[in-house]
Image (cartoon, rainbow, N blue to C red; front, side, top):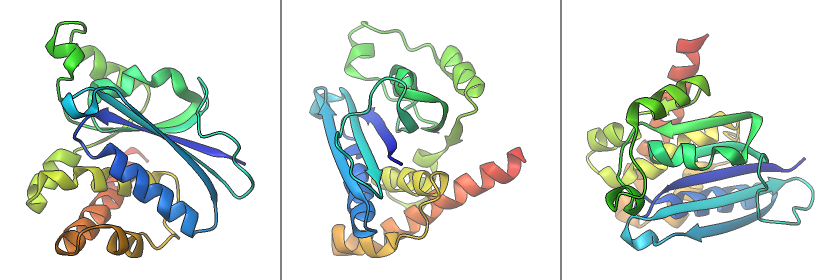
Length: 198
């Protein structure tokens, strides 16, 4: 059975790197994987989405249809709502508790309605992750994406894959230990949330 994951965010947040690590890990675990990226002015703070589909059988299309995503991982709060139409009724949402004005909000095309966003995320029973804050605590804001990757892996029950090895092989040497720590933090955050909601 094919599983579909959508990673969304704002350009510069590391969404594509997280998707690539996810894709490599799934491929090394023997899954057939298809990945597609959509950059909307990603270099200038535009909306970015990446779609990853995997299965033990063949995956024929990299594109997730409306209502077809098992999970949406959003690196920024408002971006989660922008892509909600892709979520299955029983799908899961993991959201970084982080506000970053995209080009659309900065030019006044969209209004950032934080209260409405928060109440919608609550209604969806989204797992809200303080990835930005945890990344700062680790000493490097850029590992926020790997924290979110860890949260995704835990939420989708993909822990059996050797993610630490994937990180070692695909991250610059001086950042390996930091990224492995960040990945573990992400997994722990989901566990804490799950325990708190039981």
